[in-house]
Length: 85
Image (cartoon, rainbow, N blue to C red; front, top):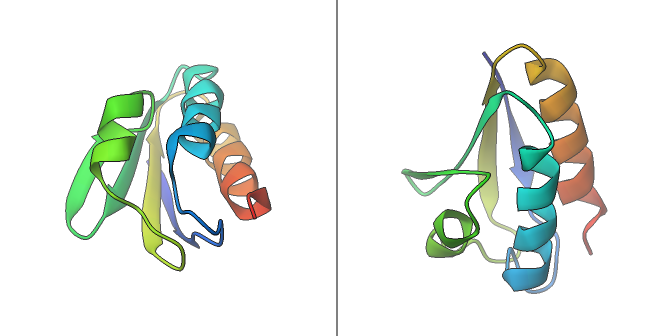
């Protein structure tokens, strides 16, 4: 299991479009991927789950991946989240 804390810099946080990109990226991996914000966690492969976290700009989230391709999953998801502006 690997995890990393990321600052969300997107002006509107994780709204529908970036959340959809996150779900697509997370779904391309076999590993279970979790996103945590303010003590609540959601499966990163669930659009409704991500939107329910209410992640805004300058929020901190923790991405956790667990499985056979966890390192690659964590790296690509973190790159995606950092590229959203």
